[in-house]
Structures are given as C-alpha cells and as structure tokens.
Length: 110
Image (cartoon, rainbow, N blue to C red; front, side):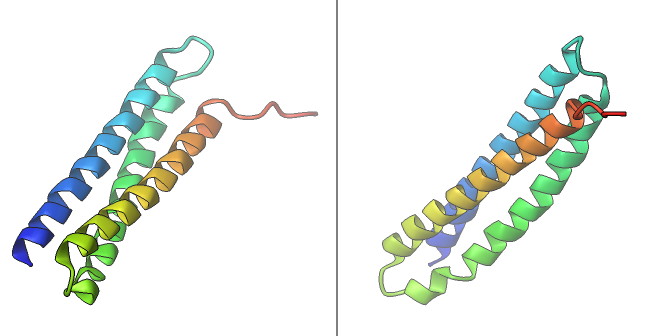
C-alpha cells in the first residue's frame, strides 16, 4: 500500500504543480497584452496560490479513500487518480475564468 500512496501523491502533485504553472503562464501572457494592465500578473499569483492550497487539500481528501478499496490496490490507485485529475481540471478552469474576469473587467454603464 505504501507504493500506491507514493505513486498517487507523486502523480497528483505533479499534475497540480503543472496546472499552477499554467495559471502563472496564462497570467503572464495576459499581463503582457497591451489591452490588459498589470493586474493580470498580480492576480495570477493570488489565484495560483489559492488553487494550489485548495488543490492540495483535494488531493489529501481523495487519498483518504484509497484504503476503502484495499482489496484491489491498482483499481483504487487508478480510480483515485482519475478523480483527482477531474477535480483539479475543474478547479483549473475556474481559476482561469477568474483570472480572465480580473484582467478584463466588464465595462461599467453609467
């Protein structure tokens, strides 16, 4: 079971860190755009940090379910990895949408 946990955490945190890096790169690209201000760069740091902490919490919560399927450790690993990738992907899309809203606020009607 130790191998299952090590594999799960290594792959889950690799996906999490890759997605955090993507949020940072998207924020940098949006910050370099002449239409948006530097708000995107600073917002990307805040959003990526929040995504990292919430994502890490999700990884740990899903890891709690690994022993529930101890009779089939390979199935438990694959099921948990699929669930964590799906959850991190949905969180990533929320983070990018939030970044886009911060960088391009809606025009105010006066």
